[in-house]
Structures are given as C-alpha cells and as structure tokens.
Image 1 (cartoon, one colour):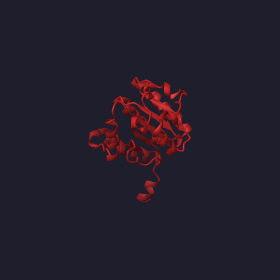
Image 2 (spheres, rainbow, N blue to C red):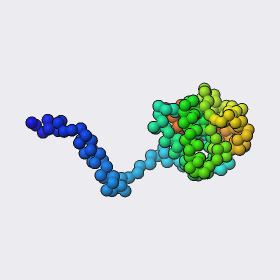
Image 3 (cartoon, helix red, strand yellow):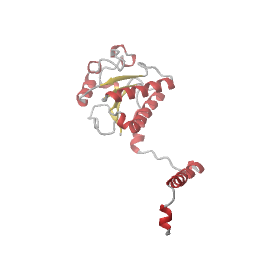
Image 4 (cartoon, rainbow, N blue to C red):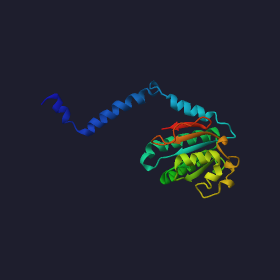
Length: 197
C-alpha cells in the first residue's frame, strides 16, 4: 500500500482533529503574535462616528434579513454598541419586514446591557417599504412627515430623541448595513455616508 493510499484510509475524524490542532495551537501558545489588521474603510467609518456632534443623530439604514444575519447582524450590533458607548444618539430604519424585528431586537438587547433608554438614546423607525431613494430624500427634507411613527407605533412627535430632528441638517452621518450596495455614496451637501458592507 502506497503512502497516498494510507493517507486516504485514515478516519476523517482523526484528520479533522489534526487540522483543528494545527490551527488552534499557535493561537493558544502565542495569541499576541497574530497581528490585528484594521482596514482603512473600517477605521474611516469609526473615525466618522467618533466625530458626531452631541446635538446630532446618526441614521442607521438596514437592508438585511435572516438570510444574511450571520454577516450583517454582528455589523449592526457593533455599530450600535459603539454609538451607545460614545453617547451618540441614533435612529434605525429597516427596508425588510423580518430585518426590522431583528434589528429592533439587537438594539433592545444592547439597551438593557448598556443601561440606555429607548426614545432617548435610540429609536427604531420600523419597516419602510420604500422606494429607498424616495424615502431617504423625504427624510432629508422633512423627517417627521416622511416617517410618522416608530417601530412601536408611537408618533415621532412624542419621541424625545427626535424632538429637534426636522431634516438632513440634524443627521450627522448615515450608516448603511446591507449585503449589497443600495444607497451609494452621498451627494455633495448630504450627510456623510458611512458604508458597512
């Protein structure tokens, strides 16, 4: 029996254990030897969010659902957690009915963990059927006329966070979290568009 034939006859479970050990042992023995790489796009997004004035909000636009939760769920949570920790207020709008519930749940869970308040530190504007470009344009011109109620069905006029939010001038940044490009880059004069794809 040749060497190759012997390799092929090894139980697959043994091969998986060997592969797991080869990957895990260096991480366990010298975890600091593995550099953490921060891509320019990621650093740029966080730098933008760190510069948000306290009197303005961030608009988080989510276009994902259950099919891409493994990718977009952690992205959404990371952005929300960062904004909460910075004391930056934000509003979430979803373009998928299932995604609206999922993103609301992420925000509600973080709210409890970090001691934040719904309607004061963040608000979810619920599911919006679109079309996206028309709604975003409407938000920029008249926020509360375009989006009348939040995820809970409460009038936006009664949400403390949105008391002074009337148009694009109170939105310092827009974050798009989606498995594909939908909104594109902001046009001159529009809020800074931070992309998370």
